[in-house]
Image 1 (cartoon, protein in one colour):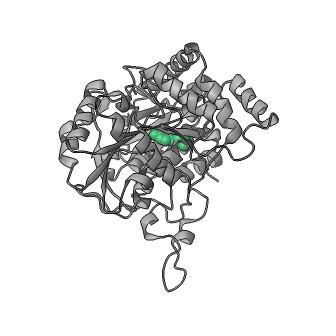
Image 2: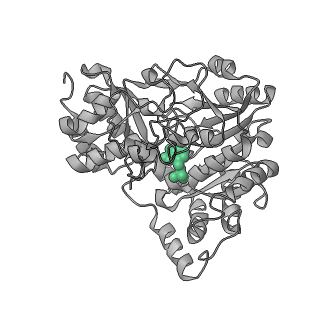
Image 3: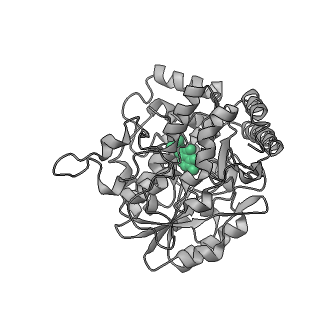
Length: 443
Ligand SMILES: Cc1ncc(COP(=O)(O)O)c(C=O)c1O
């Protein structure tokens, strides 16, 4: 079974994507082998094979979602013994005190039975205190907070709750894979707005965003800090987005799971801007902040009405989850500022180690302002400009696994020459990867 801790997947759902000349969603990447396996390890041919009367098992909304690039790349890493910088999960577990808190909760019988639907009060209060402490956002723990099975469930519940079939949902491209799948499951139409590389970073074109809004647009799905580009939307950009949302009466779902992994600039929660509180569902998760991605404790915050809507969908997805871990994450969120500062300092150092190493190896490097991913341009290396082909060859050529950014695009040509490396790994692992990547240029 493939870990999908950050699995932006290549394949996208059935609804038409207006405004792009890209292949239909679900079209395999150029050169994608037919025998690719799905995220669940099941050969994709099995999920799409006709069952009765020629009808595939997999419903049409999810057609094209059977495969992820991660299954292929992780298998490649295992087969070749390559350093896996493809997947975004830390290779060290989070704070011992927090893990001990989970053990205590298990032993003390806290959370071993169904916790309350919105989440245990201790965690809802800790989330509320966190939003107040870091962003000055005041929330009522009883009505404005919903605990979910990771940010993944939060995204799914939000989209299933807020989107009607036929609604358009604008998402920043390249995008985290679950966005496309969840928009499809909700019956919505995905409308990508592409972040473009310029001057060493990826930028949002606010005119493009404005032009993408139609009378059918229901919702903006934002992600800042942004996976995979590492872009952190500025206060000015977010203010312009907020103004658009108010003018055009749009809802916003904003995924802020990398909120504490910002190295340059600041993280500004959209919900803290004027007029946004009542129309924004803010999503975050303990996975990245506390290096505990396997616990799957996430949350949604927003107005009472917004949270109630999302809860209506969430209760029929998992109902509740991760009881003892909820108590432990309540303690984690209350860790002193020094924890958060040390995390940022360490991750910044790892970013620089990997980014400098990649630049020295000849890659074009987009040094991320946030997240734990570096996007690179492979064209300066002088070989192929096809990130898929490059990533498939890289384990043999250099003993390293990365992920082609094109997997996160509808417009695959826009993402073709870019490749993502994760730096949430120990420094010695990153140093070894950098050592292996030297000498690639000209290949
Ligand atoms: C942008 C983004 N959103 C959501 C998630 C999923 O978070 P969780 O593991 O809490 O479900 C990830 C994980 O990589 C992510 O990168």
